[in-house]
Image (cartoon, rainbow, N blue to C red; front, side):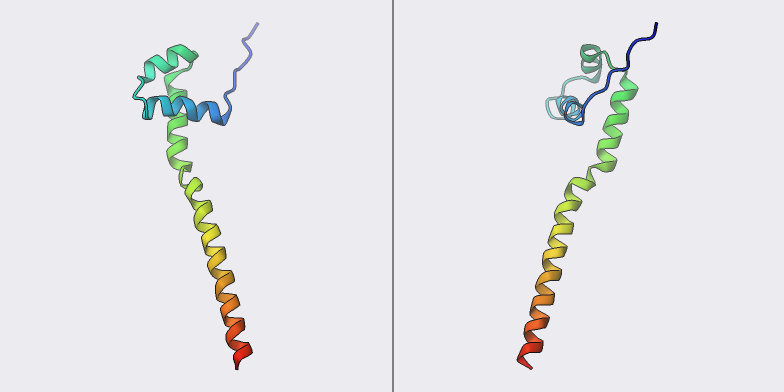
Length: 82
């Protein structure tokens, strides 16, 4: 009979990665504690770095939308003055 595959939530993955990156806990210790293959841990780390820009991209998109609204507002004001 096969073991049931475990799944980690995104929050759990980030917490494990932070324990290595911030707290300097060795990968081998984390993997042993959570019965995790090191290749899985490093795949999560690669995904975090590749997709990490998305966390900052949202702020940039919102800022661009605010700027566009401001430009439209000012253009309309100029047209009403004329």
